[in-house]
Amino acid sequence: GENVEQHPSTLSVQEGDSAVIKCTYSDSASNYFPWYKQELGKRPQLIIDIRSNVGEKKDQRIAVTLNKTAKHFSLHITETQPEDSAVYFCAASKNNDMRFGAGTRLTVKP
Amino acid sequence: NAGVTQTPKFQVLKTGQSMTLQCAQDMNHNSMYWYRQDPGMGLRLIYYSASEGTTDKGEVPNGYNVSRLNKREFSLRLESAAPSQTSVYFCASSAQVSGNTIYFGEGSWLTVV
Image: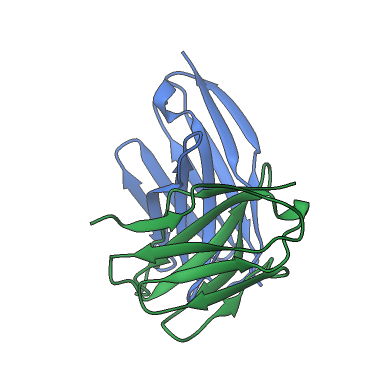
């Protein structure tokens, strides 16, 4: 099955700086790559996603890039704010089988 | 429109006991999922159901069984609970169209002692 690796496991940045989280996947047939944000004690919630026919997607301060050849994708958060502090998960999906990375705990220091 | 609803929210079991986690979605989604979440290990897929009448194993199916009762409901059963099954369990659903955005329930905290 699909294997998704995510780095780093923890990330600490100063408010206003950028944060980058990277993921790799193993199955070249995966065609959908969402990113989820999970606050403490809450459910994961989708923040952005990208499909395999697109190389980059942006939504305000959040962007995702996909390199199909290298089988990796990244989440970029600019102008970070304390409320961005959470655990972020990447995922890769083929058909109805979605596998997640182990998560990145992002801390934004005021 | 409640989205994905799962019960119970909290449960303590003794080793060897059985229990069923219930999940229902009201979004008319075809696909449903059960994940478990453990510290440092992300969300691991236990079982999924691509459509009513079908179920498939994920990456950690051992010790679990599932039933897709109808389009709305997907239950997860622990026949003989073990301490290693202490975890947070999330049910989820997706529309099964290109994109497969998954929507999660609020989670069920299960402790096996």
